[in-house]
Length: 303
Image (tube, rainbow, N blue to C red; front, side, top):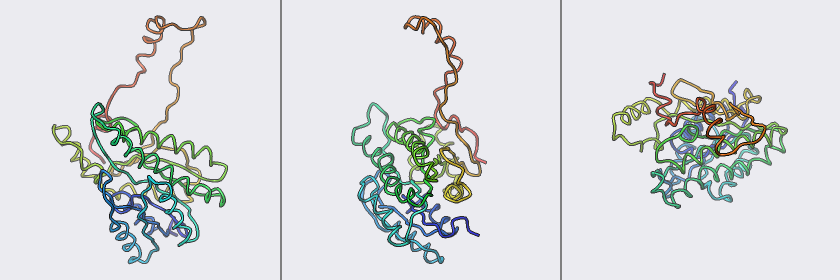
């Protein structure tokens, strides 16, 4: 039996790339799908109803059920239309995939407020907007699944992406809070940090040999490899999986740790800047994490 039989799933940013592959697989697994994409450029400019309509048409041509939605998730009223379309057309909403995104990369000291705000508005505010629209439906029916797309640019780090990294780390906090607040209602909330060649990664610079090798690795990691994990997390098989952070890298799936205390030190008379320097810093220093980029952590060829 298909794992999403009789479920209704909304996928944002589903006109291209990872979102498209999730929408197609969800439909093949029995779901009715709201295909959301406002069709903007990689940096968020312009509007094009074509990509969402094409994916919805492809699903229907294969015998599935789908409706296209062109909402801009950064606008609360438009984001709410995604869930409204699910309920209007298919009668309910069972899962939300927050995948839509833009990039406006710039080295931090040159980043403008416009570049900062635009990325935060789509990724962090947009994911909140769509999730909030679905939350009461999930609560009323006692079930529902959120799958939010984060990034190793936030979890680990990357150059020139302070806006994107901050938003993607914020999404982890959002997901965890949803998982806590909605656990009693039978709602799950998880994150995926994908590795895949798409418009979002096509702008990686290739000025150095290391950069060139990184791009070649990305080109071997297709978007369809990410979809099975997202679909699993939307299914009843994942009812006991929540507040987790996964990553997909070709045929590899990783589970990320979350911040927890790793060292402590007590001083009965309290601390001063001088004693922190003389006692605490030497004791803690071996446990400080190294400043590295995602590419340095994931340095081997994808399997």
